[in-house]
Amino acid sequence: MKVAVLGAGAIGAYVGAALHRAGAQVHLIARGPHLEKIRADGVRVLSPRGDFEARPHATDDPAEVGPVDHVFLGLKANRYAEAGPMIKPLLHDTTTIIAAQNGIPWWYFHGVPGRYAGYRINSVDPGGAVSAVLPVERAIGCVVYAATEIASPGVIRHLEGTRFSIGEPTGEISSRCTEFSEAMIAGGLKCPVEPDLRKDIWLKLMGNIAFNPISALTRATIAGMCRHADTREVVIQMMRETLDVAARLDSYPEISIERRMAGAERTGEHKTSTLQDLEKGKPLELDVILKAVVELADLTGAEAPTVRVVSALADLLNEQVSAQAS
Image (cartoon, rainbow, N blue to C red; front, side):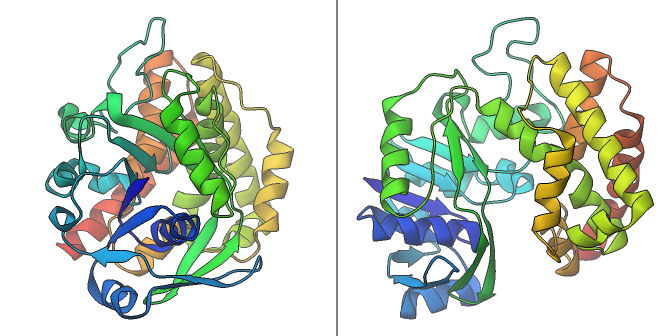
């Protein structure tokens, strides 16, 4: 099995190292000092489950890799529309694109019956720019429950979690999903193939939709937001509103808000990926997390007042960050 990891950052390099350990032919596509260190010394993973090293091929040129069986997409969703030149050399007729993204994916309404079948979420796929680059028929969804960070170039610190739930937009248990799942499991990760991955999407989004933007607005860790009584109530209200939107789309995550909050508290003084991006001066990945839910609230008639307020504030922050970065 030949796999390219496009965007071999904290999550991508971790997955690539695990797949390489399982015997897959892995190609990491990265850049900068991180790439140079991987080229020289491979990927070193520091984990409470046991440290390990892997030496997959690494490059900044997808044309050097050529067509693969699976592309594991480790890019932030706000970079998908511009990824065409990087993706194209990696594709053959049956190549899958396994997108490990937060929030609502561009393929969300692909392969589902009902009144919203085929609806394009403009905040996620503006003008069809993402689906033009990442055709929905190639898409395999992926919800990441692992927390990792780049400790230094070439060194990945695995903090917690090894689960990468995957699934077809149609709900089929396909051979292409099974093949990838088996390789991930052989590499020491959990990778269930879910018949209804949308439940996982909403389950994770319950936390992301509140903790990610609020962390950027307040600079607080997840534990800090949970400790602050008034902020905790804002988080809980955003979770309620998010579950209301999900229910209007016939999706019912099998977890209570209390359990979701308890799980968040266990992560401790962890900075969300959005706060980490803010501290690095990078544009924030909020369209798929916040704006998409506001759009879906409009679509389904949900009020979602707290989500709308936080979305407006976070969008203004993102405009300022993007202006400073340009």
